Structure formats: C-alpha cells, structure tokens
Image (cartoon, rainbow, N blue to C red; front, side, top):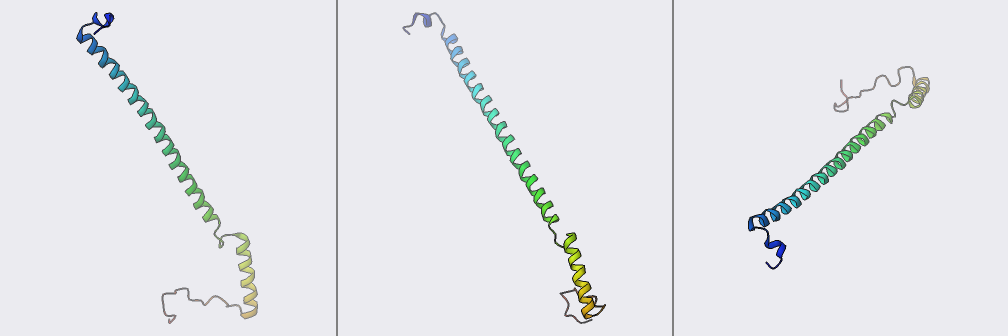
Length: 106
C-alpha cells in the first residue's frame, strides 16, 4: 500500500471497514426490494379489489336487466295475455305443459 493513511490501519481494521460498507449496501438493497414488493402487492390488491367490484356491479346490472322483472314488460305481457284471452277464451295459456323433457303425454 502506498497511501500513508491506509498504512496506519491494521489489516483487520481495513477488512472490517470493507465488510461494514458491503453489509450497508446489501441492507439498502434489501430494504429497497422490500419496499418495491410492498408497492407491487398494494397494486395487485388494488387491482383485485377493482376486479371484484366490477364483477359485483356486472352481476347487479345483469340481475337488474332481467326483462321478466321489468315493470313495463310485465304490464305489456299482462296486456297481451288479456288480449289473447279475449280472442281465444279465458283459459288461454293456462293448460301449457312447461316440462320440455317429457313427451307431452299425461
């Protein structure tokens, strides 16, 4: 070693300083990595929460769009049924067999 300042240190002191700096750098890198992991986990959780919210909203919208539950459609169906009963008799539509798996025989 040609540097007079370094020559004042013992080999053990120089090794200690080297490893100390090396360990500090590793600690900083690890801390930054942990912070990045937390940020990524937060982003992923936010995305999953958003997806769940969208699925919930879509399910609610699909349930709300059921045409057989819409009051205007129900009113129209009742009007059509009343017109058909007037044209074809009062028992129109009441003797239907809705069991499509059977052959229609009773």
